[in-house]
Length: 381
Image 1 (cartoon, rainbow, N blue to C red):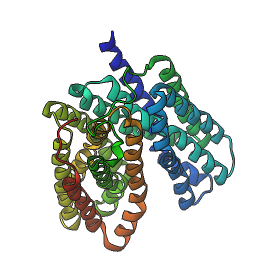
Image 2: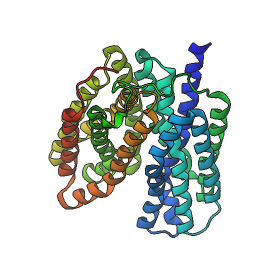
Image 3: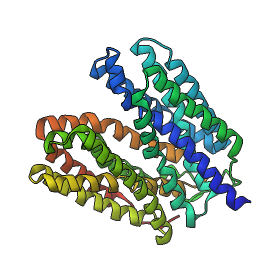
Image 4: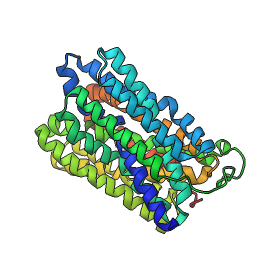
């Protein structure tokens, strides 16, 4: 019974993550509707970024609550709160009120990001944990895919209501189905029973994870516009190509987790994949500077491989922190990653404007290369 339950818990956790990610990372698909409502591009872009600012403010706090009170209540409370606030956002008028609602909803939705990884740490043993975390990490591209299909065809109010319904439905599902794993709240991880924040290995994992987000969001943010501007593709065709690559990226996260289980290490595969990302981004930069055909192939490969390390870094952080600290550690890890993600678009946008795509992609390759060095050489906890 317990053997089957852990997979049910994982499935419900993924559903909650998918609903949260559809809102947190899929809201940019509302940009055309917001501009049609009379907002400038700057105003609309600021609004769709508001949930991330709310998320950054609360990830560590949600993780601390999960460490103390358990995962089920934290996830259900956060998703439910996000759903209620999004319903309110669907009826407010004015960009200031809408932005405030989106910040609050993002702050609430951070609960599933911080606590669902801790849930996997408790329910799955080391031999299956990488695969389970890889499945969990598939929720982000799945959520974005759902938003890409549904949000553009709805009104602003309809889109926010749809996203709210997803959060509320999965909050109820989590509350009914999920059960917190039985474990000692004081258990330590590979860092010992003391405060793991003092462990250099964790800070290296935080740094490596943040560095690897930079090439991931560089490709996700500028891949389509690069194909349109530099290779002469139409936006619809470029979007379909990158959508296929996104599903490839989801599969890459799954396979990376399975590989780490077989290898008995999270950081070994993570270093190899970071190095592969650096090579592929360097090829993309070279292609952007000269040969379009090379650039297109490298872009697709980068869209797949650049996201593959995400689950490995989350799993390694949870294992090294241990059950008593995993929620807070994952909150810190997620805060660093989302902070880099939020800065990638404006920073690389300026680089592209003043220096061109080759320099922008080369900088992403450099970040991945540095991550190879920063990632610690340690076996699985």
